[in-house]
Length: 139
Image 1 (cartoon, rainbow, N blue to C red):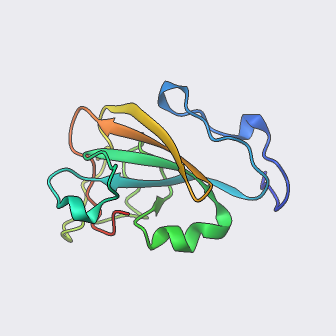
Image 2: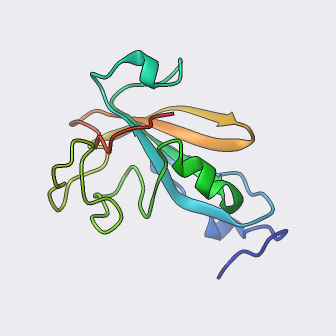
């Protein structure tokens, strides 16, 4: 079902991610398929000051800020725990194609929870390989 503006999602409509993390219910349309990546080996200036590198951040995104979030590197149509969605994100940041069945964040392990401007998020480090580098922006 679609959660209408001003309506609270039912608890069973909110996914539970690795290590038991779950978005807090809030009124309004929420997206649970929003995430961004923080590849290793890039200049620290490209990231927020407290960023974890080689990590993926799962975001509890209010629908109303989707466009603004896209301008900050947020991807849609999957999660840190999935294989890349090739229809939504067919290429690495360098323009080369992402092979089918490529994990977004291999071996995701929970690192921290946070919130920015009222948007809740959970960051996972990628312990079994490199997070996908979709290209910037990264913050």
